Image (cartoon, rainbow, N blue to C red; front, side, top):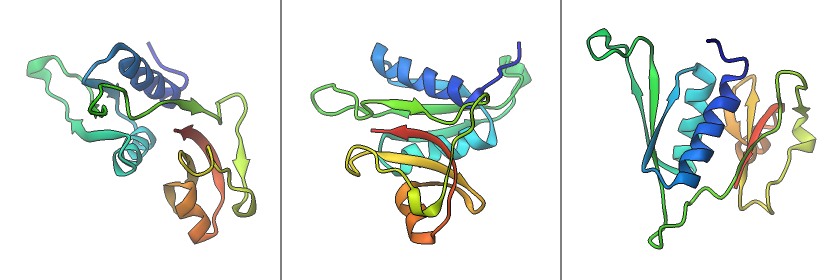
Length: 137
């Protein structure tokens, strides 16, 4: 079965894993999804990210990404919310002058630009706009 929106699928898997209290989650591999979860790791929303290669002996027929989730000392998830903004049916683009601010800069907006996938503050510094992929807080 093919997935029409692999980014939304990965975000939903991560969101559901946090709600269920899991320590890790495996999402399907995609270059954009890999860049997105690497940004989540850089911004300390998840502990670590590991790309799992194909391994036919262990019945892993295609690449996957293992995401180790992060919780506070009280057991609360660090990632409170994650929302997909630009969708396949309705793409949302932002200019460098109108980059969004998520919860007064306590969260981050993830933008796919011509210079790669980056958070809103990096896009502001480089003065580039692009597709507004999702917001995380």
